Image (cartoon, rainbow, N blue to C red; front, side, top):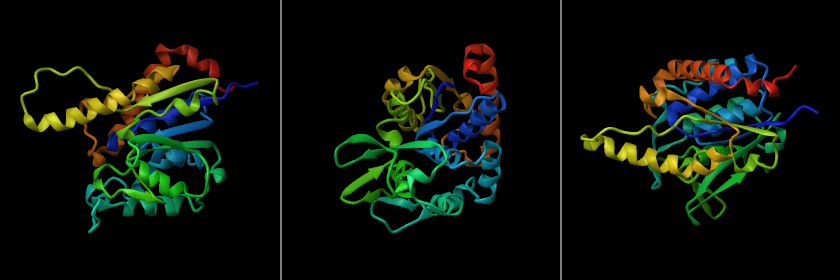
Length: 262
């Protein structure tokens, strides 16, 4: 019986566009993940993939839905829990996922959200609130308004768990992790403008360590060396970096081809 392949996609804002390139490279080599989990941008790309959208088509959908213009993505709101609403993301989900139940997806999909009421993360993979949980998973604290579901306030999944591979452990024969926020050792930091950003990245890296250890294969996108979490206009370049990185990774880890469809 063909092994079940799981893939976990990390958060990382615009850097998460690399996931599209990673998925495209894997499919071109005959590797088709069947179970997907993700946080934040990883949840957005992951749910589109789970819905049956081919990686190469997701690129066109990004262009069609204008999910690359920061002026559109940040939509000012009077909400007391954030400076922007999730208008673009909600429209994207409405247009590309007309259904709202997890069970209607073509592949198993799990989304990680951060529960502010309990200061903990939770992974959701069932029910008819698919859109709401994906929106919650991408709600960067302080930027996007928090998403209240019932009596619980949820925000970005990457706040507490940026690589939610835990859910895949007992469901898959092999787990591929894709981390678009690997933390590189820094030289002396002299700019105060770097301190906040690096601090956030360091926290996200620390909370991803457990998930990283659970992955049998871990692909790290180096786009972070050149671009930031808000480089949405560089989506094409970031996608290409994800693609090229995966091709190189496969050359270095030919054992991954064991899981390719014959």
